[in-house]
Image (cartoon, rainbow, N blue to C red; front, side):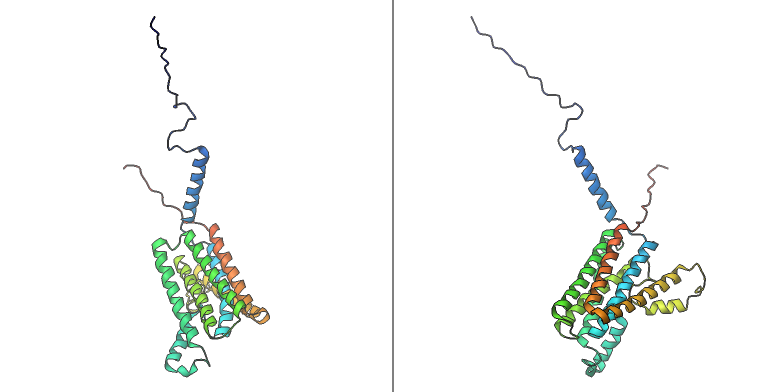
Length: 280
């Protein structure tokens, strides 16, 4: 008697049921994490809007600049932020080289002016490419500037303060680069009345303002606040310099700059323009 073969038939599993996963499909947890990462990238890619909060940040940076310049001139006979004096000193050095080592040190002023210009050029040109008002860019620039100020502070604590020589040139270069990058911010944020460094133009613009005594005058108010922040910073810097030394003053300046940079995390952003996709 012939043996009969039992045929076993198998039915494919139904993978179309609710809750099943297809190739390339994310779990709800993974999708949620991806959405959060996307939102975070979008947030830090926003353009910062110039608000009162941002103006206060720029004034804090101005205050720190006053502290910094109150120490660099007595220590190194040059400015790290205000380049008008360095420009005139450099002209004197070219025509009357005998002043080198007496009134100023040519290496210091040349380094201060040159590095300041390079920093401004580099920050400005890169800003044109990535977006000068991007949140992440402003935070990054401020943190780099803070690091440079703290590096200068470390050199002073490690090697002491010398008015000339390699340590003086390096400290001036670090502070000048931080200052050159810093000044670009006010222009990027369309707050030129708060330049964070140069006072001459602010004084002149304030004096010739036709609406100087008008109550509602935002540019005038910005200039006055800027000048006050710079003066108060200079006074505080001089006080710290006299009591604790330039290293302590630079440390305070660096901490203030770092705080101002981190505050960009909370600054308001420009509103996105709504695109009308409806057909006419």
